[in-house]
Length: 309
Image 1 (cartoon, one colour):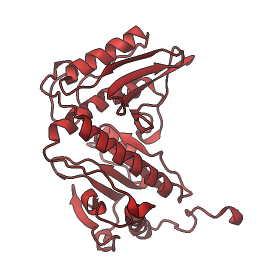
Image 2 (spheres, rainbow, N blue to C red):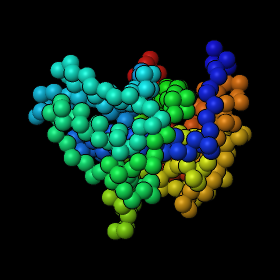
Image 3 (cartoon, rainbow, N blue to C red):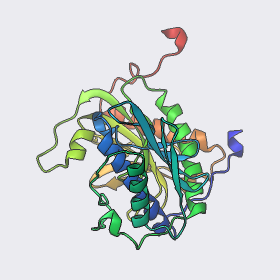
């Protein structure tokens, strides 16, 4: 029963180095997928996924499309595993003493052994670390307990996000993990183009926000939000959205780089009798707030019952 669910405790504070070490591992894996995958709208081709054993790229084609490989950060066994469609399996152990430099070196060595030819921009993205991955030895804080708790939380969040995603008839992205900011996200689109961004906007933002959207996500915390939380924002942000009522009562609007963002803190959700219902209520209320003020056609975008088709 949902009301007996016990979500794992998650804390950003005192786990900062463990979270950053994991984040750097995921960026290395993600950059490999970015370099080897075919382009898809809104950067959907670079993401990672929550799966049965951990966090994975899913299949990536190589050898002119005649084979695939996948990279999985196997949380159940605490190892990094590369598997090919030819049945080859290579792995190495994830331990608290494994540096980012060693992780990078061992993973690239495995790919070379498997004849996967790839070269990436080998620097962290947007983490304030101005070093190549091969030079980062100060982060070696892989924590089995923290990573397991985070992954088990992501398993549950992934499932709730998929249920919510299925209620929408319009264009929707997969539920996936964006490694640049390490947030699990799902986004709905109205189908209408958004105003073009200025020349100073980053290419990543220009491609992500070509169309109106309402995004929902979960992240494990950072320096600005020093605790795990769920979020939602509407782009472009309509005037007065932060006056709309959110559910549950613990949810609130905060300012995020000059635009309102809906927030539900993870530790508030863990106290709920029915966390799944409260998370779905949060996402639904944030969606309706943005969609109503942005003049989306709520009824047309609602998934009909099968007997209504």
